[in-house]
Amino acid sequence: MNLSHYDHVKEMISNKAQLCIVSKGQSIKDIQTYYDLGERIFGENRVDQLIQKATSLPKDIEWHYIGHLQKNKVKQVIPYITCLQSLDSYALANLLQKEASKINKHIDVLLEVHLADEDIHKTGLLPQDVIPLYNQIKDYSHIHIKGIMAMGPNTEDTDRIKEVFIKAKEIFDILHKQDTNISILSMGMSDDYTIALSCGSTMVRIGTYLFMEDTI
Ligand SMILES: *Cc1c(COP(=O)(O)O)cnc(C)c1O
Image (cartoon, rainbow, N blue to C red):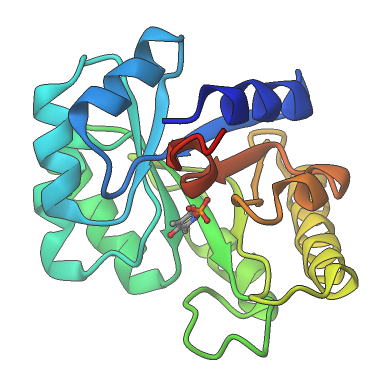
């Protein structure tokens, strides 16, 4: 836990963006502490951990799934999540729609876009595939597209990071113009969230910085 980092993050985002606290690998007790401070959006990237935490913690937490979701885990995770931030294929969208409608659950999704060519291991849609996927699934009854998720490149080069976030913002603006339900631009993590905010992020996803031990 690091409450001085928390205060700093809250001040930086002020009323510009929402905070998704990335709680992967963190204890129930530490997550509860942030809950008690008023936080309600938490992000996980493992299905088993998400379910374990969701069943132990208050029911009004909005769990966001932020990792690559395997198709064989969709059915299991659907009852617990509010938002899938990492939708990256038509096949996954279809499966989500099918399983969510079976239990009449509505799920928000963000289209994950891959913008940093240098990070070849990263997942996400190619920029040119974002609008076509949006058009294919925008009328689905149980999944609701709320925006875009992007990751900054793994580099110290702030100009390069900025370039990537500006590209994400451009794609976001195109969709937002077409559809006012598109309101979330999820970008910015511990090391680059201030840059992301300056480029128009409306949701930052922060883990490490909020959970690292206070060294003073
Ligand atoms: C782990 C993770 C984060 C948080 O990263 P930190 O550097 O710990 O802040 C954000 N987004 C995704 C998709 C992640 O996997």
